[in-house]
Amino acid sequence: MCGIIGYIGGRNAAVEVYEGLKRLEYRGYDSAGAAFCDGDKLTLIKKRGKVEKLLPHLKSVRATIGIGHTRWATHGVPSDVNAHPHSVGNICVVHNGIIENYAELKAGLEAEGSVFLSRTDSEVAAHLLNKYYDGDLLYAMKMTVGKLRGSYALMAVCKGENKIVAACNKSPLIIGYGFGENYCASDEPALAGKCETIVVMEDGDLAEITAESVAVYNAVYNCELQSVIREPEPNLAVSADMSTGDCPHYMLKEIREVPESVLSTKRAFSGIADKFKTAVSGAKRIIMTGCGTAYHAALIGKRYFESFASIPVEVETAGEFRYKDPLINEDTVLFAISQSGETADTVEAARLARSRGAKIVAVTNSHRSQLNRIADIVVPVAAGPEICVAATKSYTGQITALYLCALAFAGKDDGGIIEYAAGLCRDVVKNTNVDKLAHMCARSRGTYFMGRDLDYAVALEGSLKLKEISYVPGDGYPAGELKHGTLALIDRRTVSVFVITDKELAGKSGNAVEQVISRGGKVAVVTNVKGLELPQGVSEVITIPECDKFLSPLLSVIVLQYLAYRTAVLLKKDPDKPRNLAKSVTVE
Ligand code: GLU
Image (cartoon, rainbow, N blue to C red; front, side, top):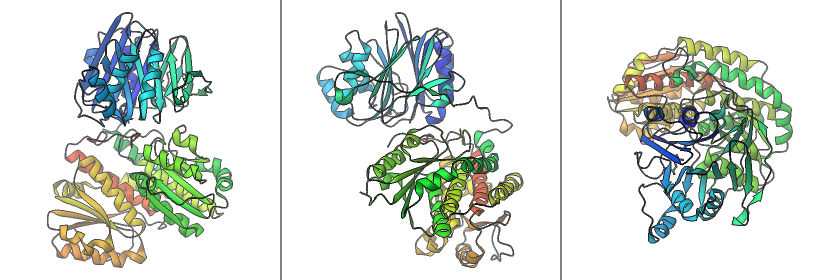
């Protein structure tokens, strides 16, 4: 889940590594570190906290080779000692992923006399590299990865060796080609504006990178290294404006970009609509999978396919789906939804479904990712770079993409309604005021989100947003379920936010509102139902424009995204970098 970057060439590696880490920080930010080689000098710097903690220590560093890491801890608390790189002897290594057999390896190495300093799984790689190093870092890496089980992207440097050696398996790694310099990174954005050509390493690949050359090998089943050719591809990562513009946080900027995410996704879909129809024609069964926000988008996508195309759809979180021995055959189409296209559980779910004959549709905001490579067809979410860890505009992009897919599957087009909906999103972005409600939520003991049908799916997303960035506890519930248990949680210190955008179901949701008020709970309603009659005692009503019920999730979610944002700011939490989380969840 972490971000890793390596540089070798004529510029100062300290600057290149630092800039790369800043661009990768959304992948993890509990600690950071770097190692630099310059001739016989090896410098190691690692700190708990965000990447900028490294800056004062980097000022004096001049080096031609460097590797860096920004961490999202899986094994061992965030601390200086657990931060990467890990160093044993003259070797330093950074690792992204999880080494599943680390305990066994560690016990063996300790029995041989190795002394471990950290609690990480990654440190075994440093000890193994040191153990197998006999003057050839590539050989040491080959022997090391032969012992590892799990997921890894590794980069190592060694005092006196004028190279970076890298290896990967189930964790992404790319090499960026420059002139007299080369890069290696876990993610394309790290190389935006740095090089024009990249190669994507494949599972089991090892690479030896100098300033002048790149050699890629594959060590199938730990046999001799075989040189392999990986096709060079253009580096599509643009030097996007990484500033927050006139907003104090990325999250606010990205909520304001929701209308554009809807429009751009529509434009992108036009380019692949025919290919999509061909790829999914003949499907008898659809499964949608994703994690977190993408799973919530899938719940909405299910309704689109079932309503527009009368085809049954099952939805399952990817982390559950892949362990349930799912029934899949050639008539099945699996929609794998992931903002980054690198979400480990979703990627593995897609691999499993593919191995059983399903067609794979990747719905992703990435133009190049593991999911893109597995998929039969990629449906682009054209939301643009999303830096804030909490998904906002990628969610609305996913909903738009699924809406268009369902219509295309049913042989229809949207007749311009997406453009219309984007215009309404613009109104909501401009005119919504959640200040009063945010104060209520910030003071609450718990905030519950409720709705029916599509509004329930949005309620789940609203609740996730609030929890992940403001840490206010709560949950999302179907409004009808309230009286079957959740009502016990309601008292005057709780807030219940009802999303009511379906005229047909409005009366029923009104009953639930009444039940909460009767128990002393505070209630807010987000609605676009004209003339909605609400019981006395509702503290706040936020109105959004009327629109087709299938598109109202695009509007109501903006209110809930704003609410989470404002609440987090009131509580003095950093909405862009919530504790314990990272954006691209590349570990299982
Ligand atoms: N498992 C390693 C650790 O906890 C790497 C985590 C990461 O990918 O950031 O240090």
